[in-house]
Length: 134
Image (cartoon, rainbow, N blue to C red; front, top):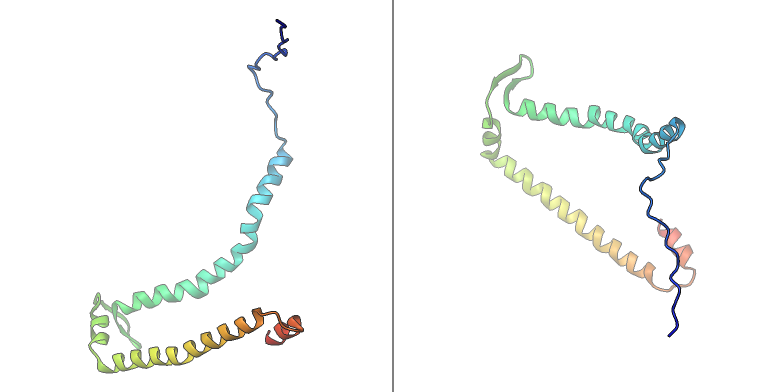
């Protein structure tokens, strides 16, 4: 019988070579990870000021007895909401709002789907028609 020679196996490394990362590389990684958030942060700050603050302030006013001349009154919890929900004009306005939404949104979506289906077909001058719709 013939004997096959075993390949020599390298001894296992007990110690791994530690690779130090230079400060400039660390700074570069930080710049790549953090800079997009720094670039977009002015938008979020402006959004918080112009979007979220009015919503929070409106919620605050809605749970108080509020007088336009005198300012803030007593804390009334949800009494203002109960009053509004008990008024018939509120329900008429809500019905009108939903009916206008349905009358305007449903035909627009149906027409948009029809146009999308037509433009998805294999047409002559496909790019021309697609650019025309834009």
